[in-house]
Length: 151
Image 1 (tube, rainbow, N blue to C red):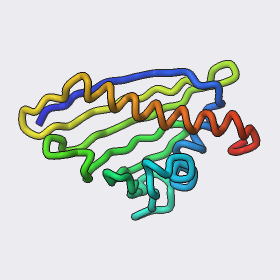
Image 2 (image 1 turned 135 degrees about the vertical axis):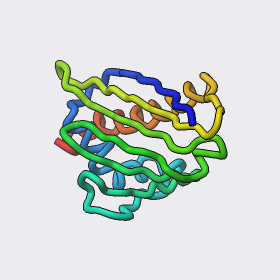
Image 3 (image 1 turned 90 degrees about the horizontal axis):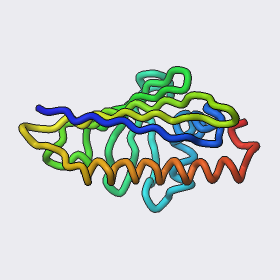
């Protein structure tokens, strides 16, 4: 098994507490409303939403994720689903939000655990980053338009 890792960082005009609540703590309610064409639902499989909770994200390509929450950090792992295909064992993500003057910095780290000697292509990583940024931009726009939400 091989591991391919990457990180990315970007700024956001939303305070870490608000963006964390929207994208992590209340994602099962908010994300399907904002992105119904991509995410059908997010269901709690086991747990109460805290550390160790297992949620099933029902995309058109239905992967699963496990979430551990602490401060403004979320770690999750996709362990099954069409998004993994035949070549990936799992994908682990860590998302962290840090405060800046009037907003936040989002730091993301990802590890792709491959089967056998398969190597992920740079274009596939870029496509994954673009999909993640698309979700963040939709939530960011919603929070900017609705400053009372998650305040």
